[in-house]
Image (tube, rainbow, N blue to C red; front, side, top):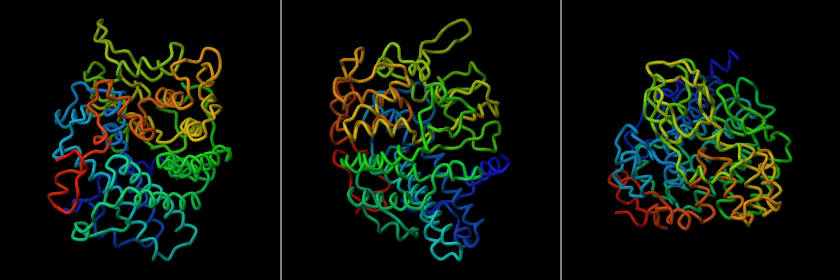
Length: 473
């Protein structure tokens, strides 16, 4: 446990010890002095931890994945959230301007994260270290790079594809690569990771939170699905099932809580350590709490739950009340405002007005694998395992909702309620070509052109050869 706490503290330091270049790609978050001093295992462990620390930014509750998957979907809205209101509401309203400050920040965040992987990959090749160790480090970094590029290509389409550290001048010469080329690099990275990463059960306790073979396989399965390759998706996802490394927990309730960490259902999980402002504490509880200070801290009002999501749950589905609160009390007055509660930590220590929460965040979990398998194969038996855990009628049985009469609709419904508010919804709807037809009738100003976000104007001002996505000026 002492080693794990030391790792958390090291990750926190990594978040504050980086500097950036002036390139539009923001490709230099590690100082030149640090980048030139990769020699020992300790040097590389520090750099690997720095790369993993980028997860705190990308999967921040107000980060790029949260905005595109929840605010741009039918799951969430926001109330009284701090910051530049117009920029934030543009995501929800499909009115994104190329000058949106958050859009550019998200672009920078991704390329900083990708650089942190690329610098390790560049330096490990010439290091005089054990070959097995070098392969595992490369696999870890290629997994992270694949994850970030997968998120980016779904968000922007064609993007600059960078696999080596670049100077600022070099970065300006990089143009957008076609989506097909980006996906080929993602697959290449993940296939290497699958081959070289250890099973989850073989990861040492001091390295908890690092990617496993199962994490790489799960992500690769999702990549294949997104590419329309259901056969390969099914093959790799079945390998995850047959590895016997993962299982559904007995109840949905047992997935959540500030002390619930790295369970048998978790495949890839971001690690947090609450109780200290100097450690990477979890921010989901505060950010998703309504914008008031009745509990001694101000909530941010992010990802407040829509009635549409709440009503998607079947009346006897226990997951609804474990995922969503109906509102909060202001003294003796109840304020109706639905909000997420999966990451609640009411006993969190307060530091400078912030709850220093302890809840981890699961990026990939086993229920996701089972639902993707039903999507890939058309076989509802995997989906029914998830429904059985919730105590609900199986697909094909009496009592199953008639509104979801095909396997495809059943998967769409089940993913929405099982994985609610876990940053999946918009990418799911894009993958199944359902985003426009489902969201437009609900009042979203979505069109086929707006299935991709605009390239930030600053990027194109710095390099006019960078093209813009259709539908944006």
